[in-house]
Image (cartoon, rainbow, N blue to C red; front, side, top):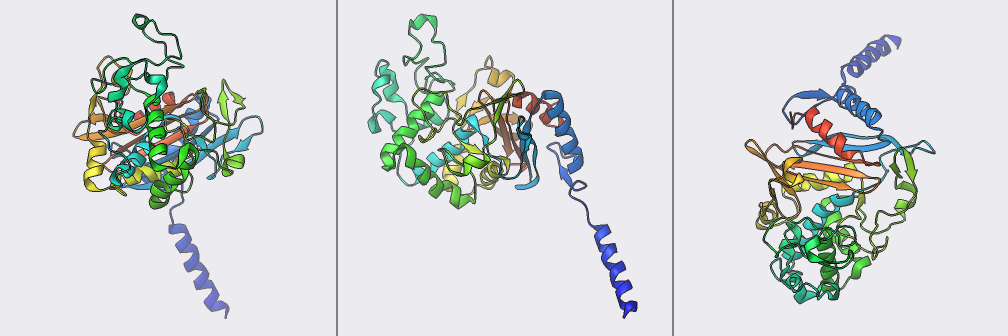
Length: 376
């Protein structure tokens, strides 16, 4: 009987030795060059060490599939709790593209007309000091051309307006030019909550029904969920844990209110699923998808969005970056103690997204885009 065991064992060992280990597996970078998973991980660990990044969740997409996904480092430096596939980060403004997709789904159902002024759906008393707000519609909001400040509570009004901080003001007429505004997204979310009859907390249920479940996304939270008790990572400032439970600093926001501009909680694996849906045009009618990704608002060349990020236009939910014969769709997110980035290309079917639990994501993105051959 032993004469049959030995050949079988040798055959099994030969098969095992021919398999490629996970770290030896190759993936394609943006410039078309190949890299092993080990090389990518080594680069990322070096950047984390040099930049002082406690934890990183990252995914790279080739041909509309995740080919590299890692959770590196710590959820909490004090306890040395390591990240794993269940760890959840604050997405900050990476909330906006996902919400834009949600709005496009609602527009297909007739729940909102993108060109109808939001004032007709829901007047906003605090904005009545500036009558021009009555002309703002959902398309203005999603393409950042409302004329609103980012947030009236944080932004310093121009001296020419003589407006106390916290009082609503407008920088220009709606539709005239680029004015990045989370406040616009907040207003649009309240309009949708009213139109849908769900309210600002239960709007998360409608998001789950129309976006999460159809796209097969497991973990995306715009409002507090029990899952976050055990899996939300801690933000860090200057290498120290910043002990706060929710990523909002707005006076009217809390963890049970749908904050379209910056409350999304997720990780790279789940956000990559959304990017793959965008690459594959999943879940939207062809005309809706094309409408969403058509460049609309011109970004001035003096803007740091143009000079630093290369964004020339804004479509409905994403910044648009021309790159040779390609078009890249990008967005970043920043909280006091979290940062995030994403990019995808429909033409090359390449993309990436990452989340870090400290404010070092911009530096990491600059280094990473050079590593993958996206920038010189």
